[in-house]
Image (tube, rainbow, N blue to C red; front, side):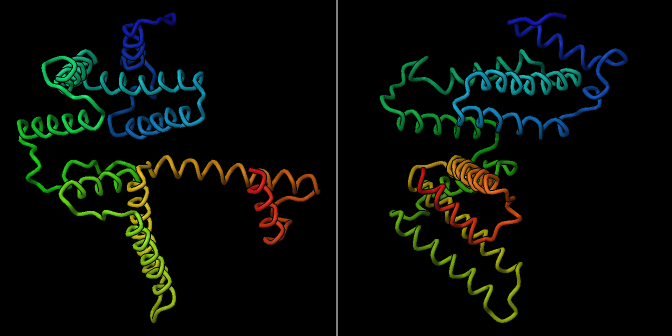
Length: 266
């Protein structure tokens, strides 16, 4: 087989990989559950390429993500459930249905109006499928989402029914309260790491809430902070290497001083 810009070639390659006897033993051994973690990983790698503004890498990672869709569709086709064409038809039909301001007579003049219209149509779809929101205001947030993202979505749903603060400063006070509860858990009678750790979860949840009130994505913020940590720690390692040292040979005070230097340079 030769490469091609045609999606049909990709579907043919996937079919060949999944053909018993002549296909790839690894591909043949997979199922929806075993492939799902790779699907999540590829989505994260797309996000990483975007964060690094690496368009060449983005092209490759989007291909890897597309492969995940093709893989799942092929396995479903083998079970006579649906095929790739059905997936394409479903998403095109959904896009047309959820954009009546583009493809029909509805009007939406700004992004917030579009979002409201989208949510209204989405709720109607769930009701028609017997999946209405009567299970509760928080229904419909996938359990498999990353914890920060799921916390954000749960809080947004609660906010729609009025369970929310009106001021970011109120959330900040909650964060301080949660930090105090961690300290109490560490200092109190019968203190345990487990009880303190549970309070850390509450602190993280409150931090997500503050990010939401600042109209920021907590996952994106933490990725940025991770990158900042890597950048500054690498600067510490380079400086220590120039002195003939490794981090394990330096004191914490020495590394703290180098951290502050790296921070000041930024």
